[in-house]
Length: 277
Length: 292
Image 1 (cartoon, rainbow over the protein chains, first blue to last red):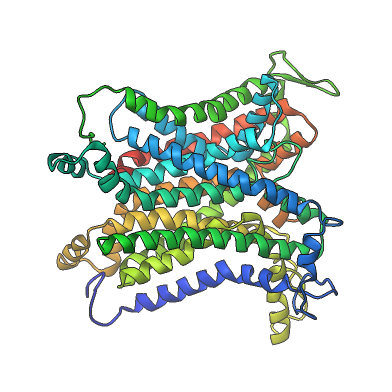
Image 2 (cartoon, each protein chain N blue to C red):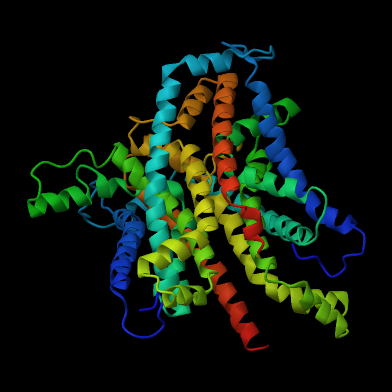
C-alpha cells in the first residue's frame, strides 16, 4: 500500500474523504442556491420554501427605490470603488513584489506591517481611519478614506500572491535573456511579463472582490453614502421581503461574472503561451 | 530572497518600487492604529464628544465591567470551536485534493469549486442560511415531513449553533487554501520512503504530512482566529442579537459616539489578536516558508 498511489485500486479513505468533500460542497453551495431560487418568489412574499407563483417582481422592486433603499446608487459607488482598488492593488503590489526580490533595509519591517494590516480587525481600522480624517479636517468619502481602508486590506493579499508568483521567476531567466543579447525592455516583455501576468490577474481578482464585498472596513470610512455591502446590511434589518434575496442573486451574479472573466483570461493566456504563439 | 541580477547597482529603484506600498500602509494603517491608541486615553463627555485629557478611565471602565468579560469569553468560545472545526475540515479536504485526486486538472477544478464562494459577498452567504435553518426552513420542513420530529427545532437559527455554522461556512476556505498550498509542495517520494521504511497509513499522515503542512496550518489558524475575533456582523445577525462578540462591544460604543471607549476596547482586542499572531509566528517562520 502506498500513501498516494497513482495506480491500483483506490484505498477506502478515498471514498470516505470523497463523501466528506461532496458534503462540504453541498454545505458551501446549498444555501446560495436556496437564495437564488427564493429570489423568484411570487407576490405572497414568503421568505421560505415552497416557491409560489414564480415571478421577477422582487428584482423589479430592487431597482425601484421606494421601499428598499438606494440599491442602484450603492452599486454605482461600489463598482467604481472596486475597480479603483483593483487597479491600485495590481500596480502597488506588483511593484512592491519586485522590490522584495532584493534585500533592502526595512524589508522585514514593511513585510510584517503588511501582515499586521491583514490581521487587524476591520472595525478597529475603520475607527482609526475615521479619527485620522477627522483630525486632518478631511471628510470621509468612499473615494478617499473608503478607498484607503480597502487598500489596507487588499494590498497584503496582493503582496502575498506576488511573493508566490515571483518565487517562480528565477533571476537566472533574466540573466539568460541578457546573455542572449536581449535588451532590458525585451527581457521584461518576453520573460518577466509572461511569467507574472496570470498572478497579476489573480491579484486583480482579489483587489476587486475584497473591495466589492467589504463590510467592516467600509462601515465608518465611506461617509454618508452607503456602498453595496452596507446597503445590504441595512436591508437585513429593515427589509423582510424576498427583495433581499433578489439583491443577493444580483450581487452573486456580478461576482461570478468577475470570477469568470478572471479565470478565463488566465486560461486563455496559458493556452496561448503553451502554443508558443 | 533571491538576489536580482543587477545586485551591484543602486538601491534607489528598489526603494521607489516599495514606496507606494509604504505610503498606503503608513497613511491607512500605522497612523490610524496609532491614533486609536491615543484616543483610547482621551475622555468622553456627553454632547461634547472627545476631550483630550489623558486618562485611563476608559480601560478601568471596560475591565471592571462584567459585560466586557462575558463578550470576550463568548468570542473565545466561538474562536476555539470554529478553529477546531475548520482545521479538521480544512486538513482533510486539502489532503483529499492533494493526495487522493490523481488527475492534476481535476484537483485544480475541485480546488476552484471550494474557492469560488470566497469571491462572493459574505453578507449574502450568511443571510442565505435563513431559509435553510429557519423555523419554516428547509431542514425543519424536511424533518417534519419524514416524521423525525413533530415540533420545528428552534435552536437551528438565531442560536450559537447558527453562528458556528455561518463561521464555518465563511472561513473554512481560509484553512483549505494555505494547507493545500503546503501539502502540494510535499515531495511524493518522502511518502513512498516512509511507506518503504514500514510506516502505516496513519504513521505517514502523522509523522510526514502533518509536520510538513504546519506552515499552512499556522497561516490558516491565523486567518480564522483574526476573522472570528474581529467579527461582529455574523454573530449579531446569526444569533438574532442574543450573542455578542468583543467587536460588538466596540460597535455599540460607536453607535453612542463614545469614541474613546470604543478605541480602548479596540486596543484591548488588538493586543489580544497580535499576541495570538505573535505566538503563531514564533511556532513557524511564515515569511521564510512563503518565499521558499
